[in-house]
Amino acid sequence: MCGRFDCHAELITIIKEFKIDRSAVDYHPSYNIAPTRQIVTVKDDGTRHLAQCRWGFIPSWADDLKIGYKMINARSETVAVKPTFRDAFKNHRCLVVANGFFEWRAVGKSKIPVYIRLKSHQLIGFAGLYNAWKSPAGEDICTCAIITTSANDLLRPVHDRMPCIIPKDKEDSWLDPKINEKDVLMSLLKPYPSDQMEYYEVSPIINKPGHDAPEVIQPVKES
Image (cartoon, rainbow, N blue to C red):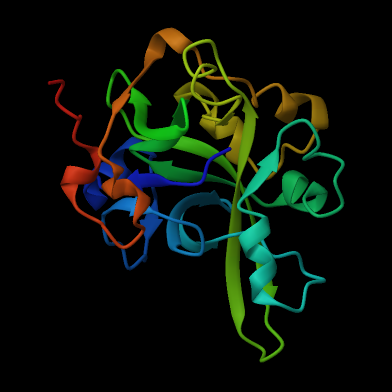
């Protein structure tokens, strides 16, 4: 799964790496992004742009914001057919911008947090789905889920799932609103190559969503 990540890059770097045409987001870098937070996404409606969405997908038929807590992730194996996500999979795909993400490795009875990123330190684009949800009060809220897949060889000892990372040369295809063939899109949702990723142990301060500072992603020094 993916339940915590960070996005601390400068806005100009995000714009450059994702070939953004326009941006009107109120962006604030964060080292500890938890569900229900506003996250930065890349969308394409004919022009490539940044948009902010609430992390936690809310289907159009839902009448309660709290349902988003249960839908922070969508499984790649069922995303094309599950009623909750299938329309968004065809028509409302996005990239969720991240520097890296966190997972917890079981060691005995303890859970050790680790930080996972690309070896190149490039920004990551998670495969995402979004929906414009209208609340009972009439408020329009953009909500979003991150698609997950089976873990690659590197991460399997840590967790059996990982977020789908769209390779740079496939981002255009994932975002293209004219592409909605299931087989084409499903071919993009694969475990990212192990040899291009790395992870290291970080401090348990990551467990507190309110702790948002650079030390969250600093490696724990071995004694």
